[in-house]
Image 1 (cartoon, rainbow, N blue to C red):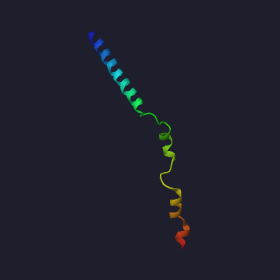
Image 2: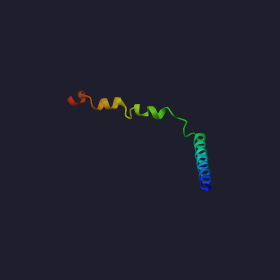
Image 3: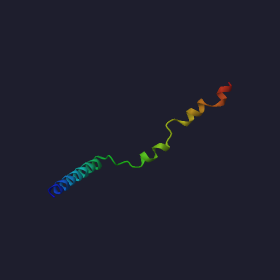
Image 4: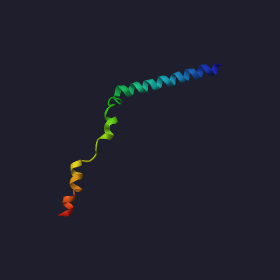
Amino acid sequence: MHIMVILIGFSLFIALCFLIFFLLAVRSGQYDDQHTPAIRMLFDDTDPKSTEEENSPAEANS
C-alpha cells in the first residue's frame, strides 16, 4: 500500500511538470498563430505568370 502513495505522488509531480511546461510554451508565444499553418498548403510556391510564360506555345512556334 505504501507503493501506491509513492506512485500517486510521482504521477502528480509529472503532471505538474507537464502543466508548467505547457504554460511556459503558451507564454512564450508558441501557440499564437493557429490560422496560417492550416491554410499554408493552399498557397502556391511559384508565380503562375512565370510558369505560363515559360510554357506558352507561342514561343515554341517562333
